[in-house]
Image 1 (cartoon, rainbow, N blue to C red):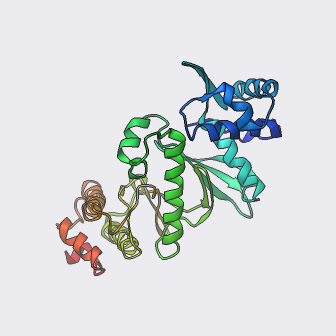
Image 2: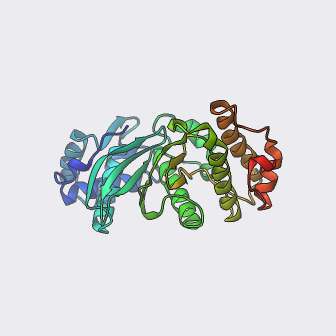
Image 3: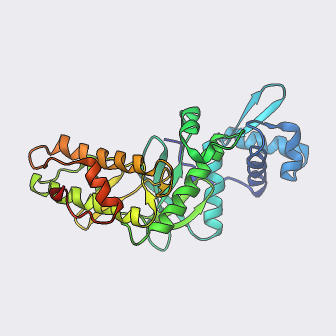
Length: 300
């Protein structure tokens, strides 16, 4: 998990944010931003740039590398600071609380607003940028793609998808978006993979999950990364989360991805609750989902 930077916000001065924003702007064109370009990018004097770099580096908000030139790059903590500042300026976020979840491609923390909400920081590319870059279609047409761009595009994609799906599909309600971060409503329940269902309920819960897959398909989306780790189960029902890899139903691979989602979900229930599970034809279930006629795996 990337370090929580909420405690740094009161230590930073306006010129520190100018420096961070300038490095961010420079990273649009180069992985490492040339030190000589920073006065122009930040509207700070060369002396002030040096001072701000020292302050930000001591707080692990930027890092330096000497290549053919002296280059600087935001860390994820530096990017977090910029997003948090924007949310605070918009009055979206008033305070940051405890972690809610840590995944391989995101960190989620509780934030205070008009009520407790969840703030998700996308981390795509943090540990294995090249692999993520290769797999994500929103980076395919760009020659210079940094982790910063990849994480921001993932957040944009997820926020747009949640906005389109909510409330017709049981997804977290989106509240705000900036850079690589999304503020959304907290949802109840535990991950399906950690839930302990009564075996008698297993088929009913599986049907609920697949009906949400159908609702999303009718709204024009395939999740494309469904598993027991992005479905939450509670007494109120289920919530499907983590949508950055979603594709439209007219995508060339939509059918293949839909079948994979269905297979992942059914496969999980077969492994964990083998006794009550009926024999299911995955392709037939996908057919019923795509034509809007799915009701229960017992029918397939």
